[in-house]
Length: 374
Image (cartoon, rainbow, N blue to C red; front, top):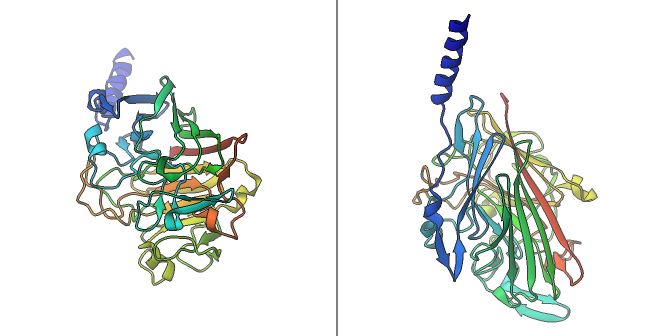
């Protein structure tokens, strides 16, 4: 009997050793002073997830999750060295928090309390994800960290990127007991400003070096915000029924991405904001599910925000090498919970993303991982 038990344990150990394991990035690769502040790499682990985070831009550098056979893969795009982020020639927002106002602001100007502000224009004539610095090119202070959570803090000074007000932001990344990566934001200001923060990890449930065209996606939204050729909302609402944007039931991302549709042409694929209608209550609800059939990995997105930006990696060109492979054309998806883009200029959008002194901005986003056969 003892021999049988020993044989079984040995077989189990050998099987485990044969599985792909987590490969941690050396923390020394991120040990650097940037703008006079210390940058570091932090490792979190809980349950089946392992995540590495840097305080440069609050970036998720790596996120390891198991497939249905227990093999581990890093499911976010990124780099293995701080210098590659600082001297980046590829996608800017890999794994970062974006703000102070996520998404696009038309014309790079806003008017608040009767005063016009000229913002930094970093995408043609428009302001994208907060401008030249935003929240992704600054070093955050680490307030606390342990094995399962890290709390970071930054004050964006009055006038940074042209925005008014000292915006005081605290952000917490937590790995939860149900194998989720949770993001909590809280912010205050001393002057009326805009505040719309979002998380910008690029996910591929097979890992870097693959496309996401065979990933299956479901979005809990019946409307999108149509956009112009420079991806600014037109101020109208479009039903997704009988269009390539209907993900109320699961479809592969590549199934209809080449369809003849004026909005697909405008976004060069999917790069649009869905209206999560069930979020009218302001409670944490299911927004989307991403599933990869080969690995069996599933990622659910939950938030209390009414906007979900789905971007299908249309501007990756395969020339940039990440930690484990090239960042291929349509090689990742971003699923960003947020307030509606360019809301400050849109008459039909009730929430203008304005934050006043005495108010507290709060926002939660959860990416929950599991495996499934379908």
